[in-house]
Length: 471
Image 1 (cartoon, rainbow, N blue to C red):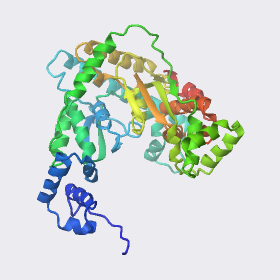
Image 2: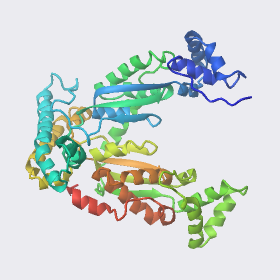
Image 3: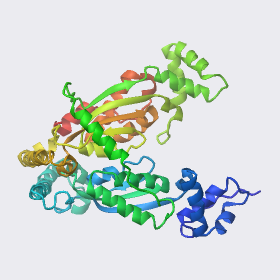
């Protein structure tokens, strides 16, 4: 039989029909195209009713893929939209675009309350200060990077824009409106909708309703029972009550701490790499590697990692070593980190309780007082609103405010994160985190981290000293 590779086109078949065509191949000798030609939307719906909804074969729903556009949603709501690991996202950048003065969301929770005036005033103040400091910070960057011969003003600004917007963006509140594109399968969407409909913010619940109404036009059966679940809000409320009882502790303020790792992680990776290429048991191989002298282990590590090219992905065996970090970072940096969804991430609620960062460029441009006044006003507004509704109060918290994040990742994912986020074009807030992460993991596992492809002489302390006058 002749090999064939072809598309089942979404222009000709609905996502639900494509999902059934793939599902039926497990018990049918016919080709995918033959199966698809005989299917109707009604027959596809019946199949999903019986097998996906009735018998719980939910993996079939993963073949129904949708592309969804979200426009003018708050960056606080985007956290919920992007909290689904097995989906893809692209969002409006705070680094390469400038926000207009009225680009913020007004939540229903504050409308008609005593907090509405405070909310609007703080958001407008943060945006007006953002626009006020764009010009003086740009002037500093223009001196550092003069216009090239034949370069127009627009081209010049496009080349240097991130240099000053990177610092000005610390003022943007979480109420800032943005656009995000999402690609996900129906199984992921059902879970996403359920989480949104169970969310404490009215905006996110409404997005969940609109997402369900939009997606159900394409996959009417697979999202038929997507609904809110009491498990999420009830569990969150119960744990919040328990956490509020805790009074002791030193509340460490280190930027990044490696709080857990397996001391035998490197040996496990090396044993697993050998395991894939022989018939010996894992116990034998682990014992063999553990008994080797350090230089001999380095030789095996060089076999595993030494041939990595610039665009190569390390072997999957690197996933056998994991690391857990407790981090304190500004909200803008968190938005960069949260995109790495293969990590296990547990963010704390966004607050104004952990202080804020001040970029050095703000100080150099002579606008530190205006910046601090806007941030202090936002913190004051947050603290007024927090006892009333802490989730809604988070809308006025700006990018520069600090937030805690607990996260776990394996060594393979660490290679991806640290190589990408330590690059010279990465934002300085996340560069220092990536490079500090490397430093901590190298102390624990020096052999396999030797092969990380990092910028020469990059140092997180230097990046912090050059770019942040206060963290």
